[in-house]
Length: 368
Image 1: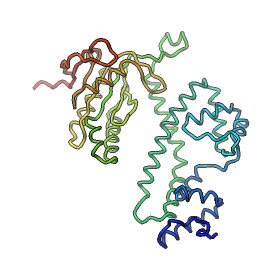
Image 2: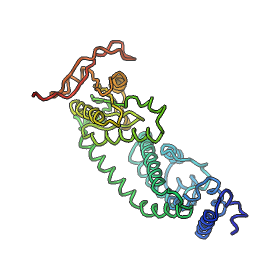
Image 3: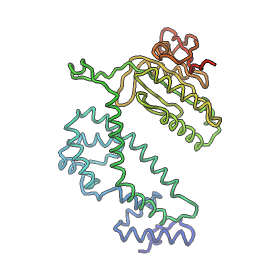
Image 4: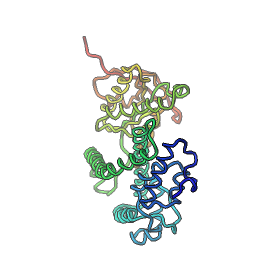
């Protein structure tokens, strides 16, 4: 194949780079990749990724209509599931799915029989969001590991392919193992009350301590620091929080420069947040944290939390001094011993008619 006449060597400068492009094109063509696929990969600057892409896909053989008929799924449910996962949804009559997609659809049919459709779609949306982040993080990690000065397109492509062949079989068992551990931990922390047994319903509303902690000065830092430095600081916050949090405290999520925690045990929550703030104070290269804690009935919906204590904890965090923890009187009453409390005065909080009594909390110093 004359790749130059096909226009697939345009923009490739240098004899070595052209030779590497030709070698990769020759090998892929011999492996059965069609010319139009090669041309599209070159135009989209992803030729080096094509060998790895081929590992992740199966040959298109079915349209969505064919797929759902074979799997025993309603077309609307299949498409809604794809959208919830954050995946593209081709026209139902376009042949875009392979044998692996068919097997996954059959699993989806069994899953649909076990749970209500509307709730399973919401859970699927959470799965898609988490896996999308995991996949992006893995892709970024691989790119940083393999890209090096002087590497040519052919070698980079085959590195991606080799790692994909080695790691892909490990991902499923590893993710299943992690899922089992998280599910087990969650079950051990839950309790089923007599009322729930009688009514057959779970009460999503729970009395919960909710905390937020954010990095002081992160916004102003973003005006002068490189993006890589900002992401590194935010990443360290997530890593530090993950290291310090232990059940029954849960690390719900990280949103940029802020983390959110919940716990049914107020004392354990206060201990975790104070340790988190103290840990950043001991690091001169890390911006100080400030935190807010509130307590009250909150709703757990699909792994996230909503309600008055969530809003209050967030707003208290914004009012807290650097390197301090601001809490409500309800938190103080339930935190137990071992803490020193000082009044921070009543705070007017948006959305609340009356000011909220607040207190700063720190660990009690041992007597000399």
